Image 1 (cartoon, one colour):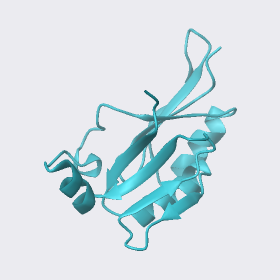
Image 2 (cartoon, helix red, strand yellow):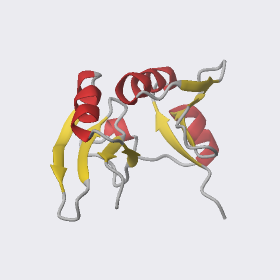
Image 3 (tube, helix red, strand yellow):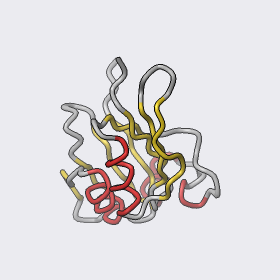
Length: 131
């Protein structure tokens, strides 16, 4: 089994794609003409980060769910990006419209981490590579 993709369910796919480019430097790789599905170029080879609108997601899952942007608290999952300069990445994300949740801090094991919440509700960890 191989990890292939993460789908984030959002209200506005194009807005999430644009935000991820501004905040994290991940350009849009694909946006379906319907606007219901889109992907960013993660530079991670075969691993895809994609966004799906709520109507399409609910149709696929055949159940309702908690929309990340409708929850006052972040959902219990995150997307993680490794970066060389966590403070700079944190500031870029906040300047692009992310909510600062945890400013950069160096953990006892030596890794620097920070957390932001995207306008679509997605929780993102920015961190240095472990080891």
